[in-house]
Amino acid sequence: MSACLDIANLSAVLPNGQRVLRSVSLSVQPGEVRALVGESGAGKTMIGKAVLGVLPSSVRIVEGDMLLEGEDLGRLQPKARRTLIGARTALIPQDPLTALNPSRRIGPQMTDRLVRILGWSGEKADMRIRQLLDEVQIRDPERVLKSYPHELSGGMRQRVLIAAAFAAEPRLIVADEPTTALDVTVQKQILRLIAALQREHGTAILFVTHDLGVVAKISQKVSVLYAGKVVEEADAAALFAAPQHPYTRALMAATPRYTDPFASLKPVDEAVLAGLAAEIAAADLAWRRPHG
Amino acid sequence: MDRASRRGLSPRLWLAGGWLLLALLAAIFAPLVAPQDPLAQDLMLERLPPLWLDGAEPGYWLGTDSLGRDLLSRLIFGGRIAFIVAFAAAIAACLVGSTLGLIAGYFGGWADRIISRIVDIWMAFPPVLFAILLVAVLGTGLSSVILAIAIIDWTRFCRVIRAEAMGQSRMDYVENARIAGYGRIGIMLREVLPNVVPSIVALLSLEMGIAVIVEAILSFVNLSISTDDPTWGGIIAEGRLSIHQAWWVLVFPLITLILTVLSFSQFGEALKARFDPVLR
Picture 1 (cartoon, each protein chain N blue to C red):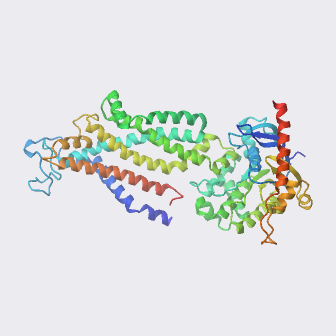
Picture 2: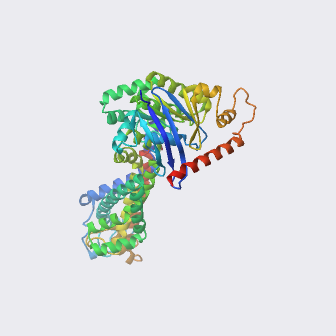
Picture 3: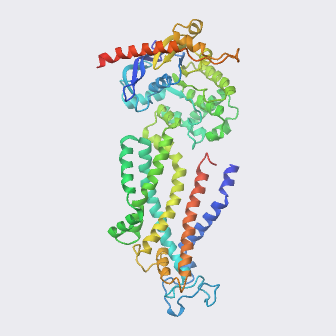
């Protein structure tokens, strides 16, 4: 059985030659949740964007392969690639405020995609959307479908986006810090919803987050990223029981404990970061040599 | 919905819209509403003051000019040209400018660089001088005036719409549409365009006001249309010569012009607020 998503040796550079992704390899099996953890700027979001084909134009992929259900995205013609990505993947974005078109009502925005991309009839798409809105526990679908995005709360908008992501039954969903922009009280509900829908639909998720607490709750596999490099990869349970890499250990130590709210926040250990920097510099040097 | 309709009833929209409607209807039905023939000269009736002053004649509401022509009738007929120019020139400028602005803002890269450079060069010319030059080249006449204003003022639309489209293109919903597999042109028209429409509408109304001014300026310097037909700018130019004997020939067309231009810009602002789903 081929993996849902298989990334091998993916490197990307900025115009100034700086590497933002350093030979990243990871795979997501069908129906599995893989968390991508790391600090901001570690390249988590960049990996998601690379998979979905929406990297900023300044970032260039210089090596590596991305296989979506066995199809090599790099070998496909742009149009075929877009069609494949459109049909098999979806995004749950970070900021529900800007992820919905402010000048269009929710209903047509959601059904449009099913009708135009998957060629469904309007009626079928409408039924499907209502079913999904029910699954994300929206109790008054009539009102929501007729609303403009600004008329809904942040949590409601994120529910709508989750429903939209699952509506077309994608094989892979990239969830890019889907709870970060939300109220803490809403975060938990949204996380539960995503987990519930994921189980029910059997969708593989690449879950980008910086929150180890979230990782523990939702994912089976974890890749820890630092400066665009995967420093540790493990089963979630194994990772939390016995983190192998010093950076992972430092990251866990830096996570605030709700059991001890008066302990001060700890930064990631400097010695660990220095060790990592040296490791990365050496790897970059070795990487550049064969490329001139 | 309640809030939307209340905003729509703002006094600003009513006053501006009311004046524009009144002026527009008067211009359309000019032969019916004008009390006199705007071209009929009668030296016996020269420089009659407005109706409420001593020495006025009934039927000449705002008085007459130095050739005895009825001022109100001339203003009403002048409105025809003002509105034709306003609508035609503003719509032409809007179509060209918004299209190029949308392309530059959404596609970026080379398209943006080329279009933006053209806009920069275009805007280096002083607009009124540019207009006079253009009309001198194109020849006087209604269509040349319209063409000249459109040629000069498309940049106004282009710059604003480019900036708006650029901002919208960075939004996540555009990225989301890309992921879903929409084509770039489809995204531009279906996702980005509806979000810049409020700005286009506001600018369009503003531009109509500007077109009225430019037309008045051109006719003031006698470069608009044939001198027989009354135009607001032309009447102002004549009024200037007789300011000491008949101030009303200068003052009333100026008031008409100012009210119209002001109404266009206010109307645009109010429309923008109404069209914008986030503002309303």
